[in-house]
Image 1 (tube, rainbow over the protein chains, first blue to last red):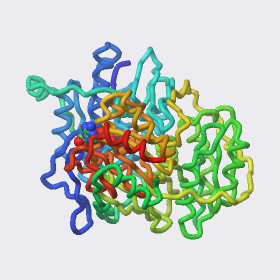
Image 2 (image 1 turned 45 degrees about the horizontal axis):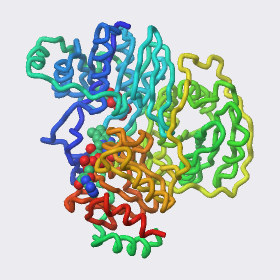
Image 3 (image 1 turned 180 degrees about the horizontal axis):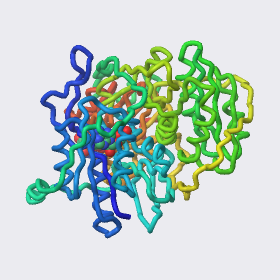
Image 4 (image 1 turned 135 degrees about the vertical axis):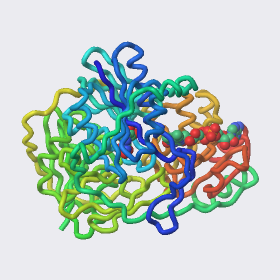
Length: 249
Length: 314
Ligand SMILES: Cc1cc2nc3c(=O)[nH]c(=O)nc-3n(C[C@H](O)[C@H](O)[C@H](O)COP(=O)(O)OP(=O)(O)OC[C@H]3O[C@@H](n4cnc5c(N)ncnc54)[C@H](O)[C@@H]3O)c2cc1C
Ligand SMILES: Nc1ncnc2c1ncn2[C@@H]1O[C@H](COP(=O)(O)O)[C@@H](O)[C@H]1O
């Protein structure tokens, strides 16, 4: 295998308490800490490990978004990716458009394996990997927690509701990562310096001629119904009484 | 008028309860006619179960040996082949549906809606984003087929008093891919109630500190007839298997009673239990965020409180 493509999405950091804007038009993202989608760091870590085992020769990170996403791509380069691609789009791109964007890069750069996160923690869609493998006509190994390459095949363990599912797939393929696949490495200062010299290519999404498909519009956002703080009991006897009162014990 | 196809989830023998919940969502579209499709090697018993689901018009079975395991790459093209008759195609937002439905949508050239929690109109829905920190109202175009997954914790199963027609269909797909092969499923299956459908669930967190200590959680659960869940921290630490994880990236559940024991209440965990009837929290830290959402809270050391509670319940 030669080339691995990894998707890095710039998202609101998972520690931020996200709030809906008062006019319901969106969530508040001004001045909020942004990070690489946690699942994508895991995707990149896995790609780097595959390369370090000598099973691939190049790791390419890609992000679709505004120029600000260069920051996340630079972090990806500092983690160890060889080069980066920013497909610039000022409006959000739905998973089908993303899949078609990735597919055009796959064709252009001859990619052998794509590793994405199992979901972006902002839109929580969990679709892009599945859509990409569909239009590529290749296997999908979603929610993967273990990935072993052997020649032009791979054995993948997937975290499914019933437990752990093992499948065998032919390469090329698309993998989406679950949280337990690995622990992403920390970026060290010298690596950040080195990353500045690595290539970061900019492409305007309009130049790729992507048809983004029928759009799903977000009409409005609202805060969820909050649960209210209930009662505190003093001891186990109080808990038992409270449960009995509700007919739960 | 809307014509909805619900893709049945099953394990080759038994219909998964997620199907009855997905049907409930489909049937809540005004005037919808709902069919259930069973893709299986042998569909008979699964189809008979499905035919009992209230609100459906018919069950269509698609039998072929390749359908023995629910592999998205194999089933998706068959769904696409029969999609023409329908305005909507729905699957559950379980790992089965999440894996499959986007592949179907992409083959049909449309975007997909994930995790429908309510139907506003035939093409407008509510769904959670940012781990449930916001609820988005989304609208799909009227002139394209609509593919979606249904957040099953938001729906109660339809009743099972129907006797719908069962027909066998023919998804005339010539070349089913062979690039994806099922090997095995390893599950820690127990006799305890299934986490996703259990009426009561007891979950343990990092505080349990070892796999052995989880025993006190199992004992309490058995006393209550409850399913057992866990926080991500407990799963990551290896105290329990992955299928027990509750939350944004685990299972989203809606039991009548949820007990969070030694769990701090991170947003990613809370999003998995928002729809629970009663939440009980036991934590030794009175400041733990879990108490902000708990209906009944007890500040205590779980290692003394849980055995005492188990003892006190009869
Ligand atoms: C992208 C992403 C997705 C995630 N998805 C999920 C998910 O799906 N589900 C999930 O659960 N988490 C998820 N997490 C992790 C989440 O952020 C928290 O880290 C996790 O839920 C913490 O688990 P915990 O409450 O068991 O552990 P902790 O936060 O460490 O809490 C342990 C609690 O136990 C209490 N305690 C300690 N000792 C005792 C004792 N003896 N008696 C009583 N109480 C005691 C402490 O006071 C503390 O409140 C995700 C994180 C990320 C970044
Ligand atoms: N804008 C983006 N840029 C790069 N990768 C993305 C982008 N959006 C989604 N992805 C990838 O697709 C995965 C799944 O995203 P989603 O389908 O939106 O939940 C993410 O974890 C990323 O790896």
